Length: 169
Image 1 (tube, helix red, strand yellow):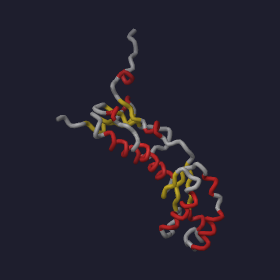
Image 2 (cartoon, rainbow, N blue to C red):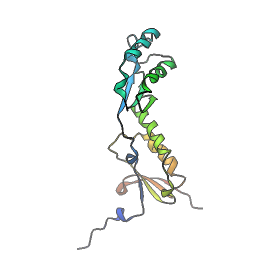
Image 3 (cartoon, rainbow, N blue to C red):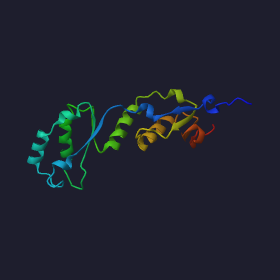
Image 4 (cartoon, one colour):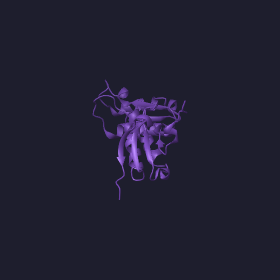
């Protein structure tokens, strides 16, 4: 009987797995509508008082997204003011929800990576992650990889979808 050979393991494919770059840490989100009258009306004095009374220490070391979960029209300073209370405790504060927070975190990480290992290589941008890797992170990654890679596929080596092939000179 012939020996089973793992052609994928023996190939020259380079796997770029965004899960490897998952920023470790607790994610939290704060909906400022909880401090609006009936979730829609911002009364400045009451809003400021509610922010002062809130226990911000619970966000120590967290990545925090600040947003308004209702259709309220709030001034830009409302979320910014909430952020001023978070900054002494949180690792990072962004405007938006947790998926937008994850995008911001990935953009920071992806900008620090040395991509030279992928020069003129066939690259698989690994899909099927166990962590909630945002689609925007894949787009950010391919923007970094495409100028270098010979080709880029998405998915797993056994069922990759071709995305890009460098034109021949």
